[in-house]
Each structure stands twice: as C-alpha cells, then as structure tokens.
Length: 99
Image (cartoon, rainbow, N blue to C red):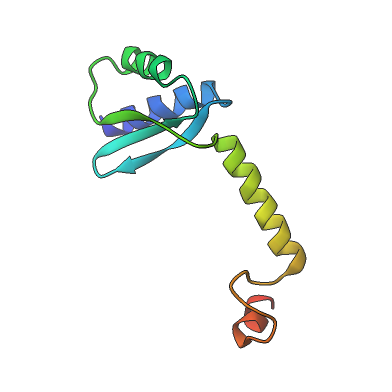
C-alpha cells in the first residue's frame, strides 16, 4: 500500500508543478510539499487516496522546479570552475577534486 500512496502523491504533485515542492518520508509518513493552497491539495489527495493512511500535506518554501533549477545552476558553476566547494586552491583535496 505504501507504494500506491507514494505513486498517487507523486502523480498528483506532477499535475500541479507550479505548487508542488516534492515528497519525502518522515518515519512512516509520506509528506507532500506544496507552496500554496494546502487545503485544496489536501482535499484533492484525500479524494484520490480514499481512506489511505500514512501521508500528510505540508507547506514547502519552493517548488520542485525551483529546486531543480537551483541544483542545475550550482552544478553548472562547479563544472565550469572545476573546483570543489569546500576547498581553497591551496588545499591538497582541491587538487584531487578538480582532476
């Protein structure tokens, strides 16, 4: 049943990408993040999941699309500079991280 709940939460979230912030597991509960309209999303998911337990809706600060854009920007910076973010050029770990 947990896989069904996860799949439905993800499928619903993908249908509202401008508000869906992702999905994570908190102990035995799936947490679906949305930036706005929490009551509407909670009601829609309640209808979809008809009595299933082990999930909740919570406010997220940003959408998954925003997270992915930020990750891509960081990856681009790191790839272009070929420098590990925790190193300074004088550290030996930097030399091995950039090779």
